[in-house]
Length: 113
Image (cartoon, rainbow, N blue to C red; front, top):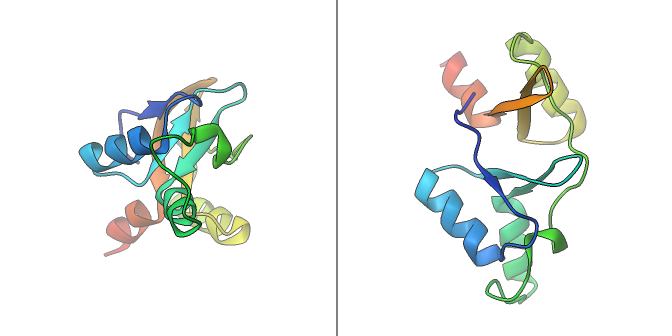
């Protein structure tokens, strides 16, 4: 998993989200809502393809709400199966209600190679 977990406010612009992802070399951010949400690079690309203005559009307009999470001790195979079954590429890692990191399909591929 990637640590520390990178977050962003739901009120931030897509431009701010894209900058945060680029600067951290990641493809997803946890959005600080209750319960937490997620915004991914795929969400940003979709908004751009629709011609939406990233300097005006807020993260809340494209984020996925109430995301699935995994505990830090879950086996790699279980995480991969969960991602495949849900059709997703990122899962926040939660330990005792604390968000501690993010596991991605890239992390899984790197571990298997």
